[in-house]
Length: 319
Ligand SMILES: C[S@@+](CC[C@H](N)C(=O)[O-])C[C@H]1O[C@@H](n2cnc3c(N)ncnc32)[C@H](O)[C@@H]1O
Image (cartoon, rainbow, N blue to C red):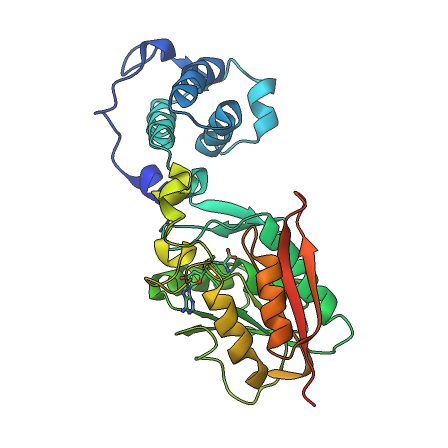
């Protein structure tokens, strides 16, 4: 159950006193959409939230089960007492810098909603390029076999399977809790027959001798030295196992798991199969060179929308 559902189903939070700005409270004046936003935005600004107005609107639309445009259309709409309490609690969590998806229990990836909880990384827009690139690399392959290493929420594995209805996908993760959530996302999209979730270290749990056409991974790549400087939303809430891996696993430059994947993937790839790795800022050339040194062909780097080298692609062509 996501954090959001806990709030929705939990007790009313009477210990959060109604804000005077809301003009409400049990038996008091009703709180309108406009008043709720007028109370929330300054609170989020004061907490240092980057996008206070947007976040207030998103939390309110989630609370009201509405769309964002409904807020502008009906600013005088009154919140019920239960809605006021849920919204106030959600805003309070956000002022503690809890990321929005860990409050609402949902995040969007490749145009689809995914269940999210604190066992998994919140899917990032950059990672959508990895899904896109994987689709391109198997577009001429009937019934491709794909693998996603470190699947987290399952966003990549599910997206690959939905974009290619003839594909089969195997996905691994070291975190049993992440896999529990990924299983829910797989079930949500009715993919139990085509997406297989496996517990273990990197490619270790993949069935041998399948011959994958594409292996994708967005492995942990934040060094332990970088962790303290991350923004609070990431540092204090996202799982360290997803950011950095097990202690020491990402290595001094954050590319140690990429190197392990470069070494492990060839036994699992079909001849001509591709390994696609997401990398952190400043890591692309290091990983690309490591791929060339490991014997991969056609090694290229794709940039993200900010012009940062983000995906390293290499083809395995045994001699
Ligand atoms: C950066 S997150 C990526 C999650 C998801 N694929 C995404 O892109 O949103 C890395 C994931 O790798 C998992 N992980 C960390 N170390 C691992 C290992 N040695 N073997 C398998 N999975 C690992 C973490 O639990 C986490 O779910």
